Length: 592
Image 1 (spheres, helix red, strand yellow):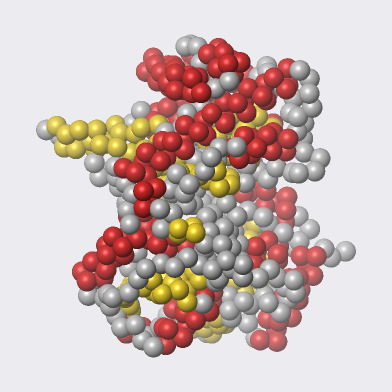
Image 2 (image 1 turned 30 degrees about the vertical axis):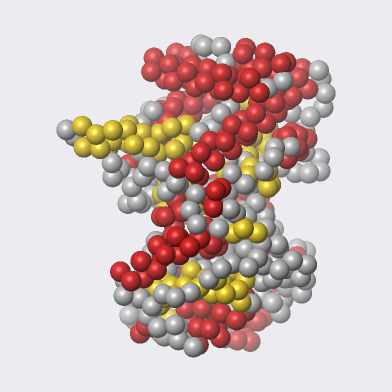
């Protein structure tokens, strides 16, 4: 018996046959290359049932495949069961990505291949890679069909339009006028007349505006066209509240961008890694200058006001976290039934009481035992597993505040743990500390530091598949670039003012998962005859439970770091915690 996803794929294949398409690619993003799209653009979920944030579908006449990375393998296998969709693994040594698979597996010996895409949800760079994979012997005809699934997806959500509001200069540390002037200086250096920005976090940062068009991401779905004299912002207005009046910025309807582009903005700078293929096709290729948008790097290097705001956010967030962990321990000791969902709700309520709170920064991962073995576990609202007074509970969560963004993971021993659980717990913590203590030359990239966190696990033939660290925005996306800390080569150096996560982990399917995560700020560490140096400041304030630590696996330096960190947490937070929580925290942060 067919399930709903088999039926939907069958209807898509009927469309393909009528249109004579050899393949359809359904991307997992939106017209702005967002990591987390609004519901309207969750096309992969609608067609296949896969709910992970990273995944692309390819449908041919006889094959349906989902391409996703190591974070989602277990989840994908479970969710694709019975759909007829096959999992294709990425970020593994044997990976075959979509362009190569289409070129070598699907249509051997064909002179012409017709591939349909929703051009609104495909990056320009992705289309270029697709064409390059086939080589010169095969003509690849890309058929761009904006909103390709509209005729099949009858109740498809509309494009959201939430209220837009400004963030004051005293909060973000730099005026909109100055930021736009920086971009115009870049245009002059590039001999360009205008720049088209489509990445939502870049637009929000540049204009000092926020909205709620995408869950957990305080951004407005929009495009921004900046020239030497002015700026035009193409955004959907909320029916109940107008977009605020922004001096020197003309606010226009979202759908009017093609009309303005047809007028010819002159030599136009675009970023092919964020610009969608449909808009790209509306532009004169002879007047385009393609390159990496400078706004992403400007945004990633936090100014002093933003850094202080992030410190404040982590102080407030740490108070909520410690009260949550105290509550959790008291509830379990009293024998109260607490589910994964109950725990997530309690933590959310504590954060919501913080002045300046604007929502969570992502969906809380509240996972006990086997659930924690899924790096991006989705906590069920109904029939969620009960927490037991033994083993490991993992909670990955964060908050969005007017003055910053947080992201923290704590793996919590709920009672007696097995030897394997304690080894995994300690080795992941050892890796976390190794990265946190790093001192490195200026110009070092995150990929050059990644092994510091993996080394303790590798030495015991253990590993994890996700990245060690990602950039974090200031009251923006909890994930941002251009920096990261992972095995994949990325030449971007870590610069003073950049904030990254430090989150090694280990996952044993069907048993448990461990992840320890703090946010760390890259800062200057001085200069000597060997050059300039960098180091990290840990921003997150929440103790690491030492009850599951095997001290013999830690070096003396690592023990000193752990004890000093826990003592700092206590001294910083205790004065503002309820007396009973402060007393409990004193016990939790005693030196080992």
